[in-house]
Amino acid sequence: MTAGDDALLAAALEARKHARAPYSEFPVGAAVLGKSGRIYTGSNVESSSYGLTLCAERLALCFALHQGETEITHIAVVADTEGAPGPCGACRQIMFDYAPDSVVLMANLRGDQRVATTRELMPWGFGPGDLAAYNTRRQKGPK
Image (tube, rainbow, N blue to C red):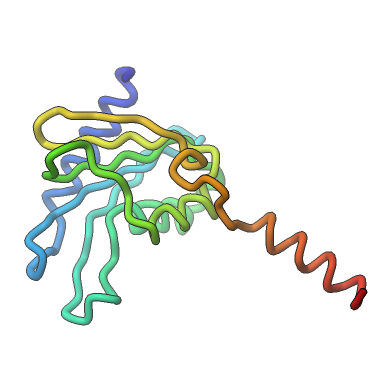
């Protein structure tokens, strides 16, 4: 891990303090680094209708995209887990869609860390390129 990685993990740890997790009591913090050098943070925000819950990673990533960031280079996630936490499947999909070449830093509160790329977290992922190829075939008409 580099000093930049440590700063991103620290931002995720700070974001965790703003989690709204009244149901699971499992606060998670995330931070993403844009190519611009700006850091965007998010925390999980739960709903009593669990399917409406926002994960920290998706919130941070969406905030970056909403602010005009076009390329995400790093994503950090921090939670109080036994080992370094991995993003859920929904977060991995959004990461694959919008940050497929990013480095993902994962850490727990005890200092356990691991690093992977988004593509390593989503082998054989389905993304924008698959839809573009499908639409190209569809425009050519039936076989």
